[in-house]
Amino acid sequence: MSEATTAAITAFTAVWKNAFAKILAQLGAESAVISDSAETPLQPASAENTSVLSAKFSGGGCLQGQLLWTCEKSVAVQCAQLLMSEPVNAAVDFSDMHADGFLEFMRQVAGEAALAWKAERELPTELVYENETPAVLESQSTFSFTIDAEKCKGLVFRLDLNPELCTALSALPPAPLPKEEPKQSPAQSKEPAKVEAPSQVSEQPTEENMPAPESDSAQSPASNLDLILDVQLEATIRFGEREMLLQDVFGLMPGAVVELNQLVNEPAELLVAGRLVAKGEVVVVDGNFGLRVTEVVSRNQRAEMLSLE
Image (cartoon, rainbow, N blue to C red; front, side, top):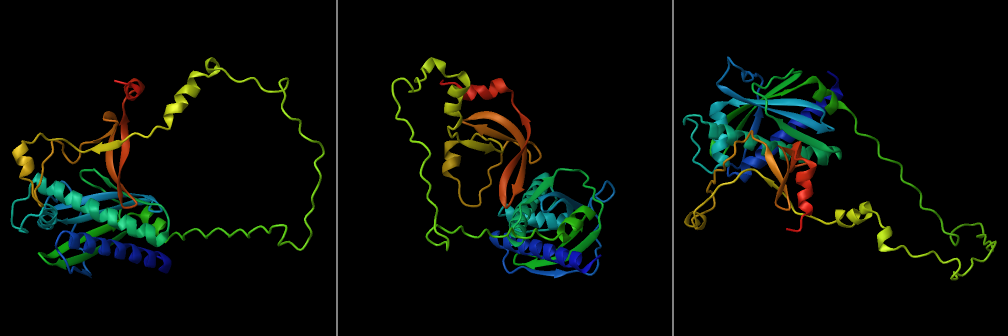
């Protein structure tokens, strides 16, 4: 592996470490100390190795390739507990709620890492969670480090990068475009400006050469539709729903968890003007949440948005 590739991968792992520290601080586990480990005892999750969890991400933009994070379930429990504002206890039984909480924790870390890498490279950056069970990756580079922070200590993570991502990381950023020199005005130019007289004088419009006004009936249906295509509509991504009693709503406090009727691996819904338009998976684009569309409703259903009812 070349020195340039090694340096780029080192910078990329440093971005992830900072992302972990920032998200942990936001969740109350401040003063995180992250140290590299010489050995990588963890192995990715598989049908035989069920004591660990793996989270796979695919890169986009300048991060073409895939990476895989792996940790013990006891570590994943602590990350989920921090996210859900629960007391941190690694000894509790691992549940599906902890798995969902850990994946959301990793999504937030990935979003922070994507935002930081975009700022460093000044190129579009995307990191998308891949719901693949078990997650399989052809690893070229493997790293392991330990996180010690307030409320949680000894969090060991393993990171695997596939060959495509290693190649993308070592690629040099494009050279900046040359700046265009400002054009000189005639007053700034050394040569005198040339002023030419018009060859002919334009005729004033008369009744004979005036264009006839178009009637409303001459407008096509397409032009009428164009009049409303620029109308802005509110778009909402819905992760799930839940009916609540009014007394429960008034009883909400910071740290409360409202459970929705939708699993983490089910598609989210895109609503436009309150109507379902598409479904897809939640992604992280440049540090912001987005929706990768996987299913679109029919044209007739989308046309219902034009109804005046």
